[in-house]
Amino acid sequence: MVETADIVVVGGGCIGASIALHLAQNHAGKIVLLEQKELANGASGKGIGIIRTHYTHPALAELAYLSQQRFHNFKELYGGYDSGFHPCGYFVLVGESDVATLKSVVQMHQSMNIKVDLIDLPQVQARVPHLNLDDVAAVAYEPHSGYGSPPQTTLAFAQRAADLGVEVLTQTPVKDIELDAAGKIHGVVTTKGAIATRTVVDCVGPWARKFTQNLGLEFPVNPVVEHVVVVERPVEFSQNHPVVSDLVNLCYSRSDPQQPYTRIGNSDPKYHPQFMLPDADDFHGQIYPQITEELHLKLIQRYPILEKGKVVEKYSGIWGVTPDYQPIIDRLEHIPGLYCAVGFSGHGYKLSPIIGEVMSQFILGDRTSIDKLNLFRFRRFQENDLVVSPVSYGQAKGLR
Ligand SMILES: Cc1cc2nc3c(=O)[nH]c(=O)nc-3n(C[C@H](O)[C@H](O)[C@H](O)COP(=O)(O)OP(=O)(O)OC[C@H]3O[C@@H](n4cnc5c(N)ncnc54)[C@H](O)[C@@H]3O)c2cc1C
Image (cartoon, rainbow, N blue to C red; front, side, top):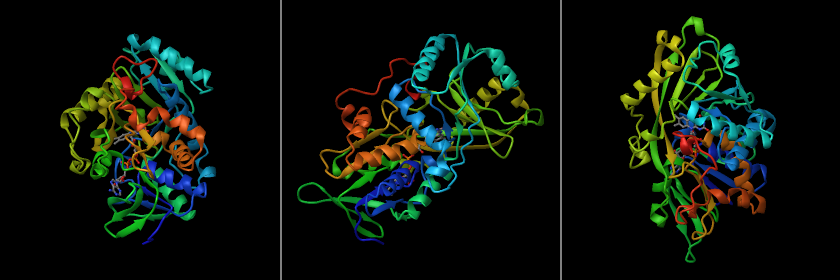
């Protein structure tokens, strides 16, 4: 194992792998990426992988838009590796009470050159005849959005990073961050030995609270269990369908690329306190049957034909959730040399290419990226200045 590095990135999810790769692309010196288990061991191993730009906050919409462009050009940008991206299109469905918000978000996105339109219900029905639109009042459509594979994308980032000279070490948990007498980063201690470095990037996702606790630095990131139900579509509904964000029933769904499967996940924030774990290490793939049954029913409500479908899988992952559902991306002033990009809640996969790019510029001292990331600063929680969108959906709130 290396004994010194210019920059050590901790956490081999899509965020850590993307940051390590972009640092290497920017010739940032000797970079090491350390993962406690295997790559994509955390949220990135289980994500549904929706890539969309529909955010009520313009800064998030912009980041999502820039990221989406990078998913479209993934192979050209990242050494020919494939992210598993399928730009199959994306619908946002809302009920009567959210129509005004949907319209204002679409208008805002169009002013930012994002390709999105309000689309008539008959057009939606023609595109997906099996979709039940009885309780839907308006729909927005993003033709360039879709879904990708978070584990495949994470591996692609890490492989490209390794090609460019990054030392990628799995099964190497970081046990401690060492400081010098002046309180500056001096190195990391792993189970396989120590690495001297002046710069550490904390990308440990749902493990964030625990990771820096012994430095007296407590991240407000809660590990939350997130469920997915997979249903096999009957032969009458064998064709793939676009991604659907269902803001009436607070769930999201997409089809699979190879098999006639549809996966559904929860976007009802009322469940998050119930599914919160004290520690990310308490996650062992546990499932709360109440929510998987509810998700299955929501899927049938939206696609009545799926009553004939078979449930082929139920599983869960964890994500790291902050009080405003937005990430913490910063340089920690009181521990010189420590950077963080954690707490991505349900947004981390789609944002991973642009976060890698902007974060690497930030670490290398680029002023424009500092301004871009100020919204996500660590101190916003102490300052009581959480990220708040100019408009918000009735129930989905910060998740959009
Ligand atoms: C079911 C589900 C559905 C989702 N759907 C979507 C979606 O549709 N679209 C979207 O954009 N996002 C989605 N997300 C969220 C997205 O997956 C996450 O935001 C993203 O994967 C976060 O990536 P990360 O790299 O920050 O964290 P993680 O992927 O959790 O990676 C953190 C890594 O750090 C490692 N680590 C922890 N401690 C240490 C240590 N001490 N030393 C070394 N390594 C350590 C962990 O093992 C882990 O591999 C979903 C998540 C889930 C669970």
